[in-house]
Image (cartoon, rainbow, N blue to C red):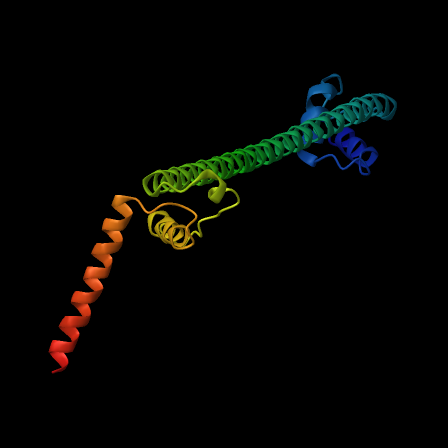
Length: 200
């Protein structure tokens, strides 16, 4: 390699930022037409200019390639991140939506079950009141507007109503009712007698 040629190339490329190693390699490849010991300034100048032109073109292409690659990597990384981000968001959204849907479904089922239980309890209560009414032969006119309190047993409550009706002569005392009343009276008498004996 011609030393003068290399010095000339290096001097012309000092602002390009190209490495000395690259300049040596390109000078060796393209400066073959200049003998190592040649002192022909014109020939050296001409070849040096050609080398510099090629070096600058190469540098421009290399810069464009590097920037393009960097941009692609950044873009693809960005898109990947965005995609992953979207997937994460979608995943979270889907999970949250599924949980919300499950909670809503569960809540609806609980409400439906509560209604069914309420209806069932109401039906059972109505049936118990009806059964007690039939048992004690309470007339329909007396049942109109009558509400058996929730804390009262329908049978006992309607038995008391029947007793009131009998007392007020609003319904006849039946044999069963009389028998029940007699038994109740007998029990009371027995209890009173037992109490008086115990006291003595």
